[in-house]
Image 1 (cartoon, one colour):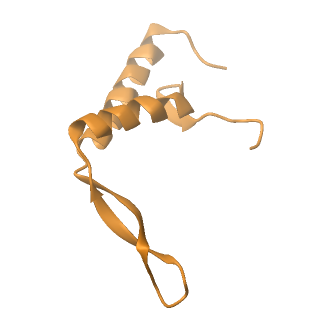
Image 2 (tube, one colour):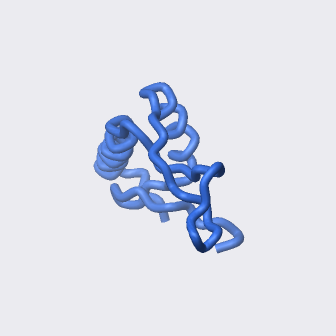
Length: 81
């Protein structure tokens, strides 16, 4: 059950702010280099530069995947889990 207590709401806001700060501090993200493969035939990983606007857009998309339970962000349970 999700608490409606103001005490926990403040903790939830703090948890969201901490999550947002971790997104906004990134300078790059890891992606697949589809032009190169290793000896096993798998695509190689590479660092992709990312802007502050891209970080914010990704945060806004992905924060919807989390719910705050007692001041802790947890992935939402889906029907497939």
